[in-house]
Length: 488
Length: 68
Image (cartoon, rainbow over all chains, first blue to last red; front, side, top):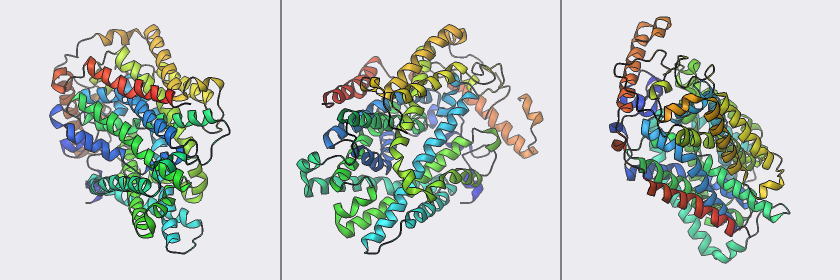
């Protein structure tokens, strides 16, 4: 497949269906791909990825097996619920992708600010997964009895980045092929790990294993693990819209996301947690050989390395699609977008260990980013607009559009977003680990969801009368209407 | 067609492709705006109740219970 073909579907010029499926054209009801089985399978494929091991490993630093399972499963479910409800129902109703769904709340240009958060999230995850790839190569060499220097990890990150670039520039087809191999394989690997854990160690040993690096205050460890679980669920924000717009019914846009992204991810993270506790290491690539022996362990490591490349390629691909929202990048060749995305990942080549150790803070940082956005979208879609959007205005860049606000920015939403982030950091600073007394009663993610949601709702009612009338309005009857300045 | 096309520095072919894309977008918007909500399936109060209990209330109770 050549470059033009690989870029098709990520910009104008391709066949209609590819443009609508992978570009920004709203998907018609007849074009949606996922019925019940398809939605569950696709969500499962998203859910079961190598980042589950990372999350489980980070939770193992703080809590033991029983509390860890509760934090990861319950936290993921809560996080996915909060982020999914408005996004999935809205994107499914109108067939739009999520950056477009954010325009009614944040404004035409304001929604592009969210793009920055989205890209930070994708690049951060890609970097962490690539370090896992580098660690995997180092541990394969170790398993064969050689003692490589730590530079091998950085070199592995560079190799993984290059391979991911190659896959991402060759388009959706190659990604689909790799996913069709990797997803069932990872599912089997997780089942195999769980079997080996129970067979060789037993539940009593797993449950009794101490956390790896807890703080001296037990309740704080638990609360931070709760935060990790909720933030892990909320960080699905980046993938929810794409899945939901492709589903045929409303129920299919919600239940598979909650069951697979929430429950299945929580279970997969828990297997990672058990492995980390038993092996007493938060590095997933150090679990395989002790759990499966040299042969099976090395085989598993090679497979995890392959899965890491696929996960990173998917992240690069999704980020490239998001960059198409920037007018200056709309007509750029696909490979140039990929290069733009690879560059911010290069620090992981030079400081893999240092950045990997900050992974738990990064996970919590996702909470600071996405919890307020989810709260604002929840209020906006359900309470202010009564689940009714003006699709014409979403694709209209002219100042007369309903969602243009002030110079393209809805300052009420952006101010509420900042307030939500400040609320999060006030309760729990993920970089320093400092917590406020109130953190004991209100998880930071929940507070950062509720506070901006309330402030945004009240401020919009008081300061923006337009939105109140919009909620009760009938669908736009505008046959023959034209867009003045279409933003596609 | 929209007024900003005349300012578009694209070549003739690109401009034509963009014009077709915008027309297609407008056709889709019209169809989706007029779509009956029932055509995309229902999500009733019972569904909300199941989701709220299953993914908010029960997990919150479990977290509180195991907080020790």
